[in-house]
Every structure is written in structure tokens, then in C-alpha cells.
Image (cartoon, rainbow, N blue to C red):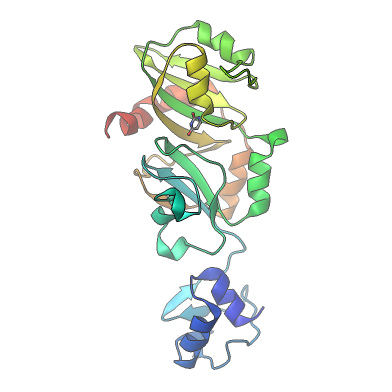
Length: 256
Ligand code: URA
């Protein structure tokens, strides 16, 4: 692979900036400053340093963000402050995008990647991985929601949802967990609207078998190890998971 292509793929530098850095002696391969930006390298075997910082070879980048309110899941800053702004510079590779969307006022787990194939595997309607949300409701949870959600809810505009799971939280009557295997626009909010309740606050806490790490604060990111990416396709025990996680994740929604 050409050295300048490798650097361009792993940093925010343009090709002409890279050329200038190489010219100033700012790029080393295996510890030696190089003169030609177009030299061939083997990024899996050789180490490349740009302005003193070693670039780590990886084919793709996977990041879990604990999204705060106020950010849009878009790559276009015309839409407002985007989730990409929350990604630390060293992880901001070219082509990074949020694989799936949360509303501007929804918190929680967003996966950012430059791997289009993985995003397709997660989002394709045929194989939508289950996602769990914690919901703070305006009115108490009613047990009849369990069957209404299970039987494929019809939204107010007539759209039909796939069967979904919902459970209320014991001794916390205005809280619920929902598990969806699809991603319609404002889906959780519209499902509760269809049963004459209202979502006050919403947080996505897991995607497939991958949950937000408990120590990941609001607005923080963590890079996923490649071996952990496959957890997206593993199952998670809905009821057991929700039971264990209520105290931790409700604190994000209670403390603004
Ligand atoms: N459902 C919603 O209503 N909003 C989200 O952000 C995600 C799911």
C-alpha cells in the first residue's frame, strides 16, 4: 500500500498535507524518516509514525458512543451538532458514520464505524439486531402493553410494527424497557403514543449482545476491539439484563 494512502486513511491529513509533512521529515517508517510519500509499505508489518505519533493498522474502526441529548446522528453539520464531534480526534478516521440513528433528544448507545458492510448487517430489515431502550414514561406502565407490543403494534398512522418486547420496572411505575428488532422513525415514542402514554426520556442501552459499558460517561466514546464487534450478533437475555441494569442506566436519565 502507498504510504500516503495509509496515512490519509488513518488521519485527517490531505494528500498534499502529507506530502509537506514527509518533506519536513515528519514521517518515519520503522523508525527512519522517509523522503517519498508514495513509497510502498506493508502496514501490517511496518510501523508508521507521523509527527511523533504511531498510527495503528486496522482495517476498520468501531466506536461505541454514549450519546448525550442535543446531538444529531448525522455526518452533516448543517443538521446541527453531530455525534462525530464527540469522537476524539485520534479516532476520527475518514468515512466514519453512525450506524443507525437516535433522535436528537435520545441518549445512549450509538455505533460509529467506517465499515459499510457491518452497518448493513446491523441495519438490514431482514436481520435487524435487537436493541434495548430504557424509557421514562409520563404515565404509569400498564401490564396490557406487554401483549399489545408482542402482537405487533399498529401506530397512529396505520404503520404496523414487528412484535416487540416490553416490561415495566417493579416499584418504578413510570419506567419500562423495550426491545425492538427494527428501527422506524421515532418508533419507541410512537409505540407508547399508540397506547396513550408518552415517552418523557429515552436511552438506548444495548445493540445485540453489546451494551454500553457502565463506566462510559455521557458524551464519551470507546473504541471497540475487533473481537468485540461480533457481540453485536449474539443474543442477550432481555428480562435478566433489564433487571440488572435499571439502577445504573436510570441514573443517566434522572441526572440531566
Ligand atoms: N425510538 C425513538 O422514538 N427514538 C429514538 O431515538 C430511538 C427509538
